[in-house]
Amino acid sequence: MKPMRKSSRQKDTAWALDVFDKAPYITVSMTRPDGTPYGLPLSVARKDGQTFYFHCADEGEKIDCLIGNPIVSLSAVSKCTPKYEEEKNNFTEYYHSAVAIGKAEFVTDDNEKIEALRLICERFLPHYMEHFDEAIVRSLNRTTIVRISLTEPPVGKSKP
Image (cartoon, rainbow, N blue to C red; front, side, top):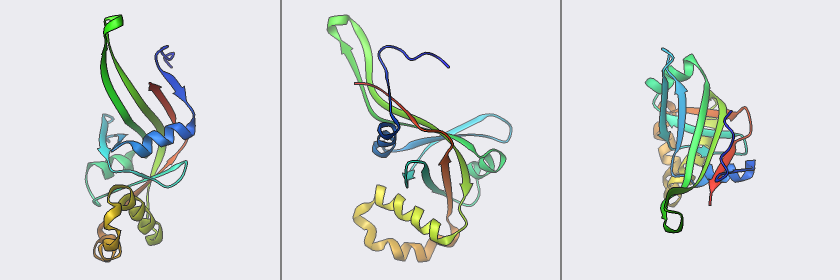
């Protein structure tokens, strides 16, 4: 593991989880069946300190990747401010970031699927929750939910 640079500070688990909560998207990185990396920003919602959910179609590259290897990496940036520091004649970037490793599993229980979809909708479209139950009736059986359970505590870094 590379040593941390002096300009970045490692943060505790709660701080890292807050970065995930504030990030507009979380990049989920996985491994394709041929061993090459595959990462993409997804609309991910957090249930607790170790459980995250996202939804997708029931076929496609994400599904193929997770069937072949369920270990994933999550990464997020909730603040990113490039800056030129005139007094130091230095280009830099101020940021808040977090990473975590977890295991992905397909959710099959309808109650858990509904709970996960509710978390996702409340995170991204909270002002439209009056339409949630109707949408569930229409789409629950054709929506795949993936649960990511962290296998180690998340790590956050920042340069204030």
